[in-house]
Amino acid sequence: MRTGPVIALLVASAFVVILNETIMGVALPRLMVDLNITAATAQWLTTGFLLTMAIVIPLTGYLLARFPLRRIYFTAMSLFTLGTLIAALAPGFEMLLAGRVVQASGTAIMMPLLMTTVLNVVDPSRRGRMMGVISIVIAVAPAIGPTVSGLILSVLDWRWMFWLVLPIAVLALSLGAVWVRNVTQTREARFDIGSVVLSALGFGGLIFGLSSIGESASGHAPIPVWIPLVVGALSLAAFVVRQLALQKSDAALLDLRTFRSRAFSLAVVLVVVVMSALFGSLILLPLYLQQVLGLDTLTVGLMLLPGGVLMGVIAPIVGALFDRFGPTPLVIPGMIVAAGALWGMTTFGTETSIAWIIAVHMTLNLGLGCVFTPLLTSALGSLPARLYSHGSATVSTLQQVAGAAGTALFITLMSVGAATAAAEGADAVAATATGVHTAFVTGAIIASAAVVLTFFVRKPAPVEGTPPVVAH
Image (cartoon, rainbow, N blue to C red; front, side, top):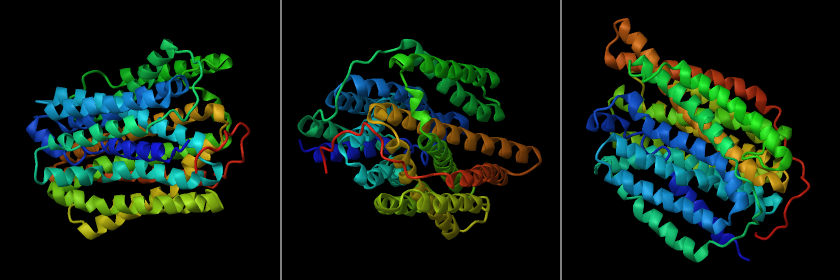
């Protein structure tokens, strides 16, 4: 069976849905005015999207094992299309957030679906190149989200960010009816509702708590910050214990035997750091460019475009280099460059030149682009075939948790830093610049620490249980 069209459609569909993770970034200042909400509230349009994905993605290990690819694809794209329609029609913040949550429910299924399909049908010797293509979806789609929204907002109302996506989503559904076939095997799997509840409370509590720190800095926290953090941590611990018990009978919602692979565990830790840095900078840069430098949305979008394009251009090249040389000569320099770029962002202030900002942003994306593909391929390629769906779900879950945590952390640090500076007498622009500096310093320190871990990344050895190749 020819699986090329199936993978092509999955890649294209995933690109469109993942693009929506960060499409709200540039729009936040305008939404704050139009909907009369604070920055900490507005960021929930992004954090809420990522949080929903973190809650839904753990279910995909079960879904991909239990149901055929075609049914899962139509469910994912139907949810995304419905959510896009709700957001386009939204009269206020509450309905807009609801649309984003429904969108995210569909988006959450697409990335594990794409990765699991590729792992099952692509020869291991070509996985680096294919993961390079997937990296375009994971990294480049979010990276150009601000550019797309900036271009739209320069001439149209913010609702057009959804109206323009809607026909593309409908087209993907239509093409799916023609191209998508069941190229993966299904098996009986048990659905454990207790694991679902613990997963939602665990990941949801942690991200809600992180986001509430930012709201508390501006005096808008609905409940004490420590409550969701403690609930999240305890629930996550209980979730892990439950999975360890259930996986003995192959009944775990998320099989944690994936972490028995040293290559998988190390790569996942680095992916978490990289995604935190990427999403934190993606949410903070548009706010800095508009609120500190006073730039319009079109200019901001165009400034962030070169970095996204660069990451897209190098992704297939990095994949091919991985197939030939392995991850080590790519991941180490890539992480060093990314950490250096974050240190460069600590120099951003009220008088920083546009050229310097673009150069530093491109450098960050260059470094991250050299890290994504090798880490993903090393992590998933080190697993036996029976754990592919769980490995894909685990990596995708932690990517989104890291993205949501990075978003919440950077906004929180900015809010706290700005509030402190304002209390000391700084004006609004100078206070915001101080908050941005605080956030980027923290990001740079974390990325610098992660450089040490890259020296331990190795190319995974061939694993028993690799499925036969059915596509080239």
